[in-house]
Length: 292
Image 1 (cartoon, rainbow, N blue to C red):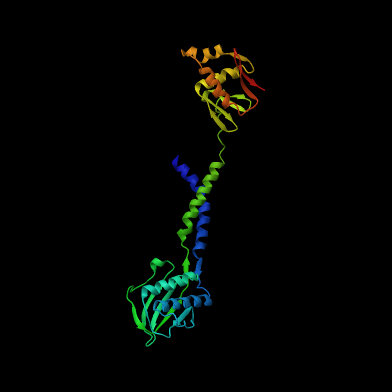
Image 2 (image 1 turned 90 degrees about the vertical axis):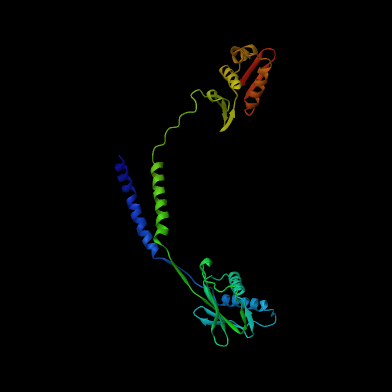
């Protein structure tokens, strides 16, 4: 039996899974390339970096020199004045300025001495910042003439086979199972009660002690249910107080007192939403359920 079920499932899902594998192989060859921002935006962001570096050196008068485009996504900022650079501040200043300009987080920053063009400090920033390489934090570069070069690089990401295959496989199998189950004939819903009775716009279920009016469920107590059953059996007829008291209370060895009037009042409130139904008091005789 189990083997038969497995064979049926295999035949059912074999073709969709083959199609899924072919689609995934095509998607595997697709790549996404993240290109750097435009030339002018990069220059504006680097000028902001230069401005912040001068301010951190208490220099608010020196003009930030023009940014040089070295080609191939390389840009250079060369100061004409001596200043000290703190690596932590530089990393944060570049990151903040680039973020404001909406530049990508894929670049290498180099700080070179003007005198010999030797690299005094450099770091790499990646899209995933946690994987970036930021060495020598906390070691300040002494006051000197520096050139800052930023090189952006493109990132090509290849979509993995499993990245598409597993979610799509689960989705297709789930959809097929859903369609399979939906195609089965629905079971016929059994009626709530075979003794249901209609009073105006209400449906009365004596076995479940409740009234239903347009999907609204009104719960009845046991005594209310017994009284309503008597009234429904004899609509538009006066039923004596003695008869009601005897059948609902005295036959069970209970002394009634004013209980009948209390329960009639409660029942009247639960039927008041339908103006075609009235539970009236016939003075000195009993009660009558009037149904138009």
